[in-house]
Length: 371
Image (cartoon, rainbow, N blue to C red; front, side, top):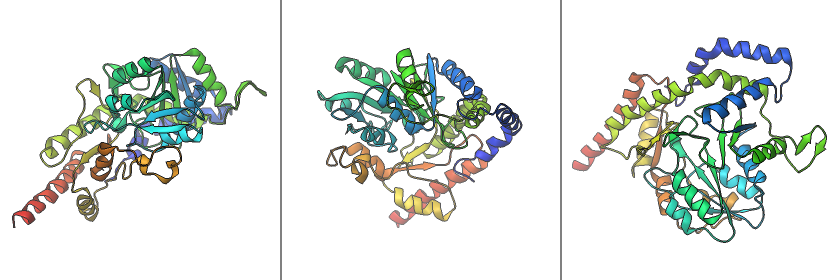
């Protein structure tokens, strides 16, 4: 059993992938070649947004979005403390201050009320992470951003393929950012990412910034970086894209099977009725997390913890945020969450093996306590 099985997926696309690779080798445009152009147009249509600008990673997508918005020293950007480090890291790299708002403990996403409480005159933007595949409350967050003159940025690194009130993840804010890391719902065979926006001026700025700020070859009109997507990775993504919707539905079925069997024992994922999650992770919560981890390890059941430490406790961010911030929901989640295997190729026998292991753990604990 694997936590994520990319081999099974590869076997489905191997022939198409080989043909696409040969095409790249024949034309020789390995950076920003026709595959990149095709991918950007296809993703923009799928997300229902005017422009998709591909980049070299999800972190670079966030960094580029902030650069394009002019975020820098003296500015504050509000984001989640319960997430991978990339959103906060991108803010700090530009010399801005990271302000954390606590999360909704049901969805693990930013709590809009907590966001509004930390807005100051220096606030410039909100980065809302759609964690574990479920979109954040973008209508409420968008209303808050508009009321205070802020820019709302969507971090859809884990949610591409999900929907929020019928709208596609990636297209829910002024600018959306996603990752194509191999384990993501749409992943390449290396690093990759993209920005989405309906703003043509912002899209053009993003394109310049990803290529050293060039408006044409050797004409640099602003300081940029080098973070372009290569054509081979675009070819991988084009081969995988037709699988995205069906894989999301299959993961949803796995999640439903898990939840039906485990809801009486642990806190299972809560999905808002207006959301369709991409189920990029299946994350339970229990105060007995550490003992359960040890038990699953003995049984060779793959599992991991996303995330064991909140971002406001990370040493690298100490100079850019308030390490003494009171964020109790995020801190509790870091103590209790545990992610179980979920992918489209996890068969029912392996799902039942995971379920049996978790149920046996709690049954044995119950016998021990009763005894």
